Image 1 (cartoon, helix red, strand yellow):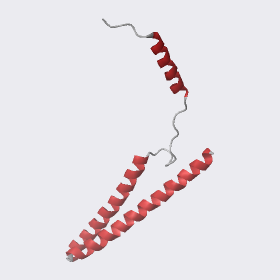
Image 2 (cartoon, rainbow, N blue to C red; image 1 turned 30 degrees about the horizontal axis):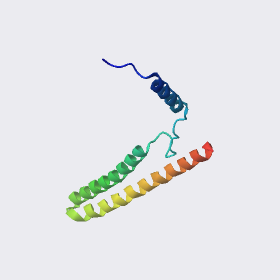
Image 3 (cartoon, rainbow, N blue to C red; image 1 turned 90 degrees about the horizontal axis):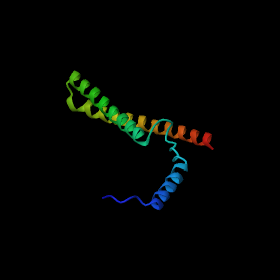
Image 4 (cartoon, rainbow, N blue to C red; image 1 turned 30 degrees about the vertical axis):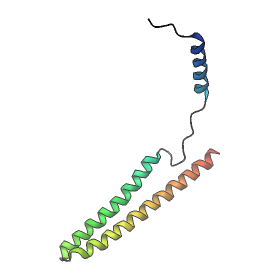
Length: 107
């Protein structure tokens, strides 16, 4: 029922496969050695969220302790946000320096 495969088409396919196998693998980006773009993005998101959560928890704890409910919560939430952004930017600078160093060593 099934017809025999065309030998010319098979030979052409094998030649195409050999050409593809002979090419070099795509170059890896120089984000940071061992990290993908997604891992770097998640790291930064986690750093920002952690700063906000810690600031909020400290502010809420102080408000409960002193009985001044929204004041310290708001202040320390903003401090937590600022700390998270600062940490995130520091990580971005560090990864940028590592990428530049890897790029220089690669050339």
